[in-house]
Length: 220
Image 1: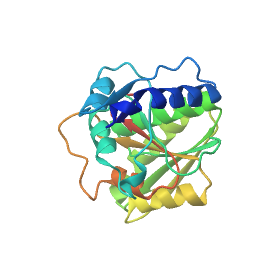
Image 2: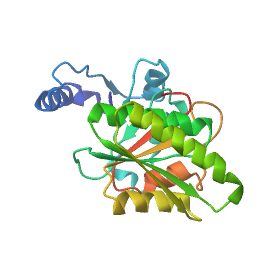
Image 3: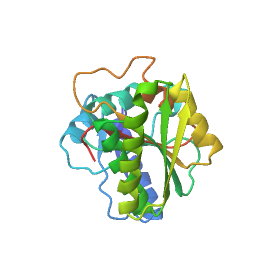
Image 4: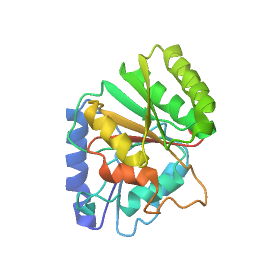
């Protein structure tokens, strides 16, 4: 799906996309172009539920902040969304940041399935703000998460860290650990806004220098 403002670009852009797809072994890919007022087109197609994974490239002029299309699609998401960041690289190691609880289980399933399909290894990371009451619950969650990954024949390690800024800790771990993709959860479709400046997911999307897979609640 490609959206733009100039309808005269339809044919040349279709040709460019077709050639690009063929160069990367995607000769059978469907190419959809929309020009003029395309407000809500991407969200509409996403809500139709026809896709197992959405690959999204943010606008190059959006700077460090995720643009409105990214945040709107994440609000509407009924499938995991892989947001391309940084230079292309082989995907061999995934860093999965998980919280204890039901949303965390969704993130684990989505990340483990992607790792299994790619033949990649998985690092499960839980960032704690230091609450001593969550210890047993977190350990139980991480044990079950590791079992889920290994049940899919995915090599898995578990890491725990304490940090006052979870987003910065996750981005730092990805960089220092040489991980190729960061996997995180999201709020899932619904009325809750994700556009607050302190939202951990948006912080990671703004600060990460590598692809980020966002797995909304209930989509994996």
